[in-house]
Length: 322
Image (cartoon, rainbow, N blue to C red; front, side, top):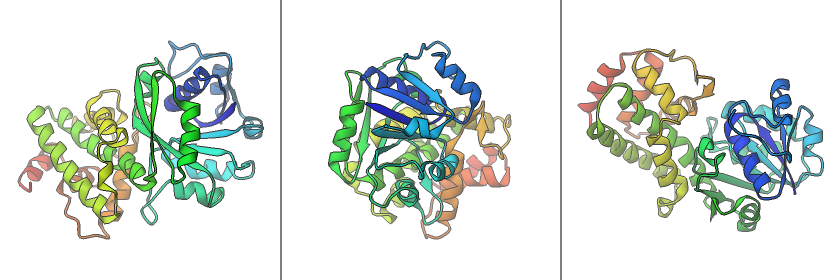
């Protein structure tokens, strides 16, 4: 099967290797000429130790990438998804879309699947891929479990036949709104946990912040009617653990530097990696302004970003509120 992948960098490359391992042809679309040359030479800029398979290709031509494809994977930075969907819509031919972009829309506080439906078709077959996974480990074939989620269970089951193998395992879910909000809010909790490391507090303090973050996330869930029975999923508990505990996380790199005043708060890129948690804070700030939810931890993070206040002083003030 020919699978088209639109995106760039780590997760995009890792998923291409998964698809190749499962006897598919992975055809990637990039807008960067140097990246295209590297991949077609079977090299990876982000994983220099990996030799890409001969059935992994890359092109600057979106029409070439999409022609005869049966599945499209969207693995893009959140801020780029809408502009790329605008380019994709003229070539889209009812292929199954696997959304691996982790985000939430700021306008109307809606999941990114609604954006895909807006630019393609309202009833376009969409599956959301999420879970406890670092691309750096997936590319090494480290055992990993993810969730494939669609309102149409048959779409998710079909995606499972394409992605699952002995080391990349897949569960099925139908709660599309929940799984995408998990994506977004776990990044916010992760940056709170890694702020603690940057401030050089210890595990007791991180546990305090982790518990407060879970409570505040639950308040947001209740506002958007999330199914609370899904809490034990790999897309929530598993992904939360991975993001909040590993130094491979982009959120860790960002907030460790912020806590030490070694990074600009206006820059959402750190070491050439996009920190999605910072974008979600902007969205969360707008949403909380429309509700009566009291979220002192989220407000602390927002104040550090927006006000440029001293992180340690702000955190000590937060401790008096919980």
